[in-house]
Amino acid sequence: MNRPWVDGNDVRLLINGEEFYPRVFEAMAAAKEEILLETFIIFDDKVGQQLRQVLIEAAQRGVRVEMVADGYGTADLPDSFIGSMTEAGVRFHSFDPQPRLIGMRTNLFRRLHRKIVVIDGERAFVGGINYSADHLGDYGPMAKQDYAVEVTGPVVTQIHASSRRLMAPVLEPPSQVRPTRQPTGSISAVLVERDNLLRTTDIEKEYLAAFRSARERIVVANAYFFPGYRLLRELRNAARRGVEVTLILQGQPDMRWVRALSRLLYNYLLRDGVVIHEYCQRPLHGKVALVDDEWVTVGSSNLDPLSLSFNLEANLLIRDRAFNQQLYEHLTELGSQQCKAVTMERMIRGYWWRAPLIFLCFHIIRYFPVIAGWFPAHRKRLQSLQPATEADVHFHEGKT
Image (cartoon, rainbow, N blue to C red; front, side):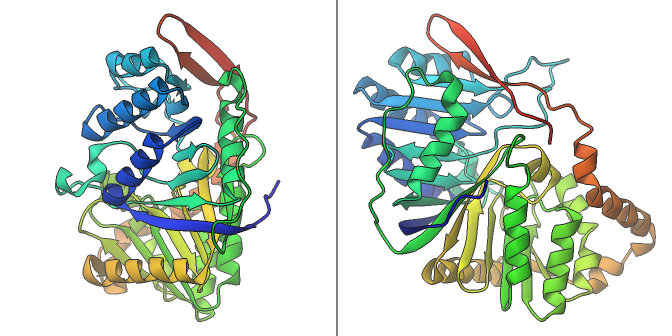
């Protein structure tokens, strides 16, 4: 099921909402035929409203606009927000909407966590940035640090096909756009996905292969770090053979339990030379990594059980020295100027009471893929919201 690497692409790194939103909204405003959009979260704030407006304007000038938003991530989106788009011709599809139970969202697992936009089959955006004002610096101390890429070239064919396949049950008629295969640069790239049918471990396998092949450096900046046992072992093994392994993790988390879980793994990694920084400037929401001087990944997948075993995710893998160096310099600056170094001495304090938890955590993450299989793979739905009618379209995926 692995896709081939494709040469001839141009890839642009976009850091935070300040760089991402202007580029993606400009591309949407210039769309001539089709906009395919997938996202986890849309908020009814200044960013969400700008997204709504640019999509409405595109639909009004005859562009086909198809968007899928996760039912959990958009559970609080007002009906009026969606209605204003569907009335203008935007086709809005909710991924697996579920009723609330005592006011609580119940669709916790197997979410659509991908963040993808494809414009006219020629330009795509892949990353971890949602459509919400908390990705902008003026949001305040809890503004998120995050990443995406803008890409043109033959690899857009893979991204377009992936989005079209996800939306296939509601694409009536099917998309007629044929992506260009013309080279636009010199970068090699490939789209890697995780789903609950055929690509259940594809993203994890790419990380494992990259870590095993590392000879000089590994840098991982990931928001929710609680990976499987195999990934932890490969990071430790890389450090043992002399690879410079650096992790940039949450130091000012948006959810405190996330940092608590990650810290249970620190001793295991620190004792073999892995360098750990906690980013304290703002909540880290990024999902990026680089290996040696060419390999890079940017996407939606965290290194935690939800992303690696349940959610639908998409990462772009990139091979390019200049792009790798650009991200390396950025992350090095982040680690040296805006992070706190985690030391073994700091982690040893209170170790006596954390040791049983660490032992338990290792066994849980070691067997989590099996544990995840015990959970029912609930039926997925794309619910198409239209001005006058609602049509439920069902499609199925197997168990993880």
